[in-house]
Image (tube, rainbow, N blue to C red; front, top):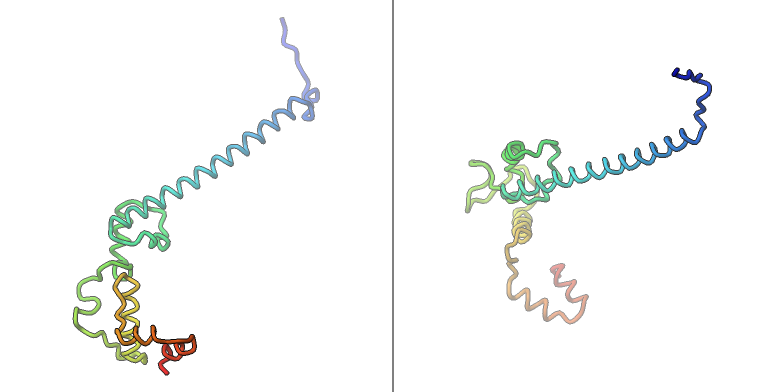
Length: 159
């Protein structure tokens, strides 16, 4: 029994067998690409959730995760990042000696903003962090007594 020798020119790449193989290969390749994309998306979401959970555990608002640009989301890396930026992260206590002491006015000699405006901005920031606004009772009475939009606008403008 001998083995029949077949010349290379007898195989045509346009034959039905090759066409079916190419079709199957393209189908598997597209399925593989789709699955790879889904895995990458899933891994990114898991990494994001893990980072947010670590930030919550450190007492940092999880929205701060937008500013964390490292690929390493291990607890050690996130802790080091939080420690490095704790003075500027919302809700974190500044390092000792940084910032103002309770009861002291932080006066910036280089600013041209009047102290009254600085105080108003400070009150707005406190309200934004959950404090109750401090509105004088007589101002509330004047607002309620305004009988037209023009009167209310004039009152709010201080006229």
